[in-house]
Each structure stands twice: as structure tokens, then as C-alpha cells.
Length: 439
Ligand code: HSE
Image (cartoon, rainbow, N blue to C red; front, side):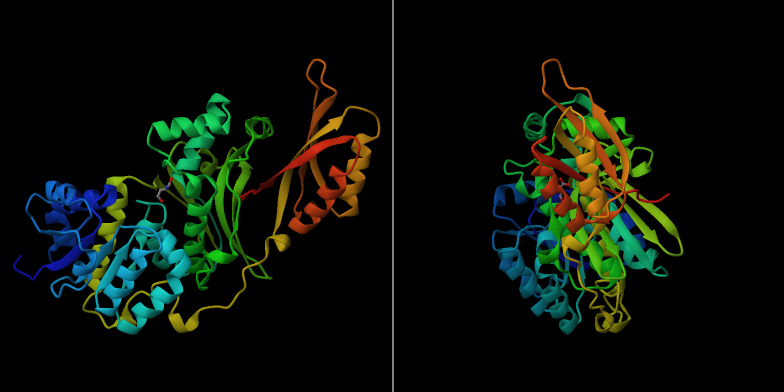
């Protein structure tokens, strides 16, 4: 084909950048047949020049100055794979100001500064594509933004952090404590040396924030997300949940309700029989409920060089195809037309409605259960199931597990404050949220 290639400037040639370079080269012919013109990386910026030279083998220009790439007149599309909110933001804004399209895997940047970035892109008539930012290789952005466009989306729930899913799978399989498995995950290279963003749910919150915008046509509002990670999760609760027919997963959840949008990340009990409950190890999965289509499930690798490159290149092909279209005829960045965004508020966590798993350490004597159920009834909380575990040899207290029906977070918190004040209840009550995720 003698059609003029589209030129790409790559910022960062680490794991994903390297994968993007390799896959673009390996599948060049098929990608060109799909895109209608060749997509070639003409310039790479990386602080590690030796690495950049080694990977690119003289196929393109290499620099350690990322700003040179976003200002290069020959670059049509900038691929930002640096990450974080700092220099990455400056580079993306500069690229947009220079009239370049941007493809990014940077969920943190878009979840926090997305509104500003998309607005700037809109003004400049350029595209900002971010398939690789959510669930790596799974084409979830495309599915929600385009494939499900006929639907009123009701909710989205996803296992969108592989590190924590790996840790939870290992805790359940081997009955090990969180700390032990985290060390193992770090040794295997799943978790980063500073795994805070993964284990505390921040990474998942970035991703569900973006999904909530795509699903409901609302601005990105990471600052309103409720975030609870898995670092305080006790292995015993994974076992008890299992005995009750549930698995615990770190879910990103966003639901449309009459009162507003729920936006939350927390460990969640889900019925073990659901397909998504059986997503194990570092795999990701996203469940989307549309009013017309019903539940749809997307599964695949949420991280790694080539899976994430798959998403980056899909965006490159999209941008290449749409490059010559009038900006107003392109697919909107956040699925809905920018002048048709909704101001549906994000609900405060206190107003969220769900059901709960509670574990209490109680004295094993008459009247204890009656005292507890009276407090729950006083908050209009209905109990779905109760089990008491026999105390171990010589132990004065027993574990009492209760599953509630749906209630409001503020009601359960009010009840737990009263329950924890009872003399017969030892320490804090463990509270985990439960979701049925369909019939
Ligand atoms: N750290 C993420 C995860 C991958 O563990 O899934 C990149 O988003």
C-alpha cells in the first residue's frame, strides 16, 4: 500500500511501550489492512536511552526528551505510557495544544484530570483514547461506549485490579494471611514494591471512575469515589464466606439509582455460582448490566506487555480511521456528547444501599443473639442468615456470622455502633458488603 503512514510518538518504552512496539511490528501487515494505512512509530522518548535503542534497533528516532516528541511536527499521535499525574499531564496537555491525538493507558491521570483533558481535546478537535487504561487488554471502553450504546446502563461491576485478585485467590486457595500472600505477589512481580495503589483500591477506583462516566454520561469524579482496599481483610472471612456460598472479590461498582450514582470500591461477597466469582489469579472481568441486553461479561488480562499493547494499538487504529472525520462526527470521548452530559450526583457512601456480611465475637450465653437482633430491628435491618461457630477449645467467645438483607450504609453503621457497645460483644464487628450481581 502506498498510502501515507500515520506517525506515532511513543512516550515511555517500558513494559507496555515495548509490547506496543513489538506487536505493531509483528502484526504490521494485518494492522495496516485494518487501519487503511500503515501505523509506524517514528519517535520514542525514554529516560533509559540504551533500553529504547535496544528495543527499537534503529527503526526510529530515540530521545530522552519527551517534550521533543509532543512538539515534533511529524508526529500525528502521541502515545503516553509514562503514568502518574505529574509530567504525564504536562505532556498530554502540550500534545493536545499542539493538535496531536493522544492515546494513553494512564487511568490515574484521566480519573483525576479527565474533565480538563477532554475539554482541551474537544476545543482542539483531537482525540484522547484510553482503552488501555481500564482492564488492560479487555476492550471494555469500546464495549460500553459503542457496543452497548442502545442501552440505558444500569450498573457496572468489575474485577479491575489483577494484583488484588491474585492475592484474594491465593488467600482463599491456600488459607494464607494477606501479608504472607502480598510478599509472595511481590516476589513473583505481580505487586509493585510500593503496592499501595493496588491493595488499597485506588487503582480500581481510577478505573471504575472512568467506567461510571462512560456508562452514565457524567463527568469523571474520582474525588467522590468510596475506596476500601483488601489490606485489612482477614482470611477467616474468606473461609466463612466460602461456607455460605460466596467468594470475596475486590469490586469496582457503579450503579445508577433514583437518587444518584453509586461509585465505590471495596471487598465484596458475591455468590460463588456467578461466572465473575470464578475469575481467579491476576485476570480481570467486568460485568455490565444494560436494560436491553441484560448482563454482559468481559474477561481477559488486565495487565502485561502485549495484552495492554493490544488495547493501545486498537486505539491507534481507531484514531487512524477517524483522523480525517469531522470532530463532531467522531465517537465522543466519554460516550455521550459533551453538551449532553448529565449532572446526576455521586451518592455519599452513607446513602448507598446493599446487603452485608457481619462477623462478631460474642460471649456464648443466653440473650446475646436477642440483644443484637433487637438493635438491627431498631434500624429496620432484616436478617437473611445467622450462623454461630462453636468456640475453640478454652475460648470464651464464639464467632457469630450474620447476613443482612438490603439496607442503607448509614443504618448498618448506626446499628454496629450500638452492637459494639454491648458488653457481650468483643472488639470491632467485621463488616463486608454483599452484591447479588443478577439473578
Ligand atoms: N496494577 C494493575 C493491576 C495493572 O494490578 O491490575 C495496571 O492497571
